[in-house]
Image (cartoon, one colour):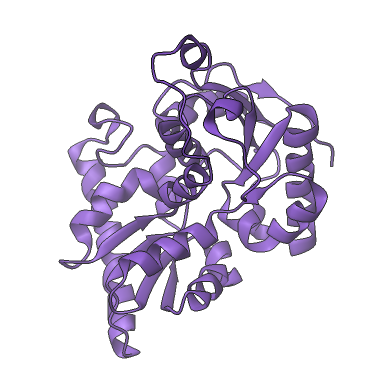
Length: 299
């Protein structure tokens, strides 16, 4: 990605961010925090989720259509695939279909785990579709890590119900005590099962990778639940860091007219359920999504 532009040039450019739903807004939130003068176009393919129940061929077709929309119609000069399933099963197809750099969320998460781990043993929690793809296992193995993955299917619905702890979205949006206790107990059970399995297989994990874009809203709960000394890696933050590091060190002066004129601008698109997107999206993005625009990508 050495051909990316410096920050001043990118202020007039657009980064496209794609997810099958709206969980990828946590990736967008992390990108905005690091690149506050850039324009962003986010697309949630909400009409066709969940991707995890589809075939690899269908996922690739859907993801390529979304990528082409962001590049051809929104002028994206860089694509971030803020969807673990699409990153696992369609990244190659997307890279072949569009003439811009493409970054997924899995390899950055694995690289961050490599940097954090001293034992070389890593735990990964994700959705069932991501775990079945073994994409994190492969990416971690390429980094010289041993990995144990676990699907945690109850966590996404808990996040979408708002049963989360204090996060970057603010404590005011956190769940009440009883709701929070339910989520914390679910996390405790999942981690107990995972650490017991790790011990049984001779692993000594010191790092936990959050392999779903919904999970950053639960990060504080995970950090309380993991064994002492275990690092928690947020793949959304890791992905945003990879993109931000790709820019030239030349910076726009914070208070220059050009910088002020190019404060982060976000346009959000969805293929269905725009009202739900607007309602839940602000929790993931930590700011209003604005008016979400409905788009039709075809079958």
